[in-house]
Image 1 (cartoon, helix red, strand yellow):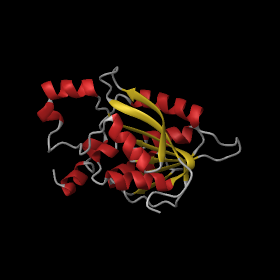
Image 2 (cartoon, one colour):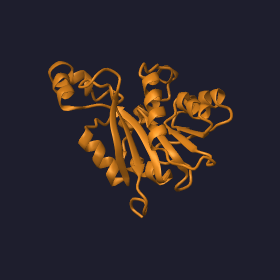
Image 3 (cartoon, one colour):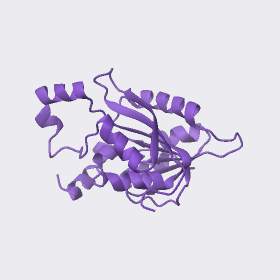
Image 4 (cartoon, one colour):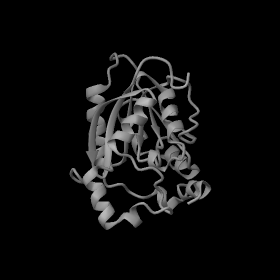
Length: 218
């Protein structure tokens, strides 16, 4: 699949209205991670970004927590729908590699089931780091590829799972995802999984903190 074809794939209304059955579990884990790891004074107004917001499920979630909610998505269809659903939030059309926000802007950046579709993964992680405040949180999910699950995929569904015409461009192991996070200035705090039981998790659920100090490449 060419990069231009890949972009068009995610602009289609059919793909945008696909329902992820793990959404309730992701919301439960997200709420727990925020309770455990978000350290702000009670008077602070939390600024939260959903990077790759789709139709706005998690933008709405942030609004329900009384956060100042933002969303960004590469799809005009997604942005239009999310704006209708969350009229008080700021939702913009933007790619993960080029987010139109100031440095050190957000206390929380949520990026769920997006990074596996990105060509420039390093650029995307650096952008996520740039817009996250020092000591702020990046919480993400990406499809899980552990050793036992990989063995099953290899023996049963290799050609289908890794099809060159499929929407997934990147396949993360814990080690490769850890490397991406640390290179971008994040310290992983917790590794969990969503969808099915281990070792067949559907996705990683990772909470990381942006380390103080200069931005990557600065």
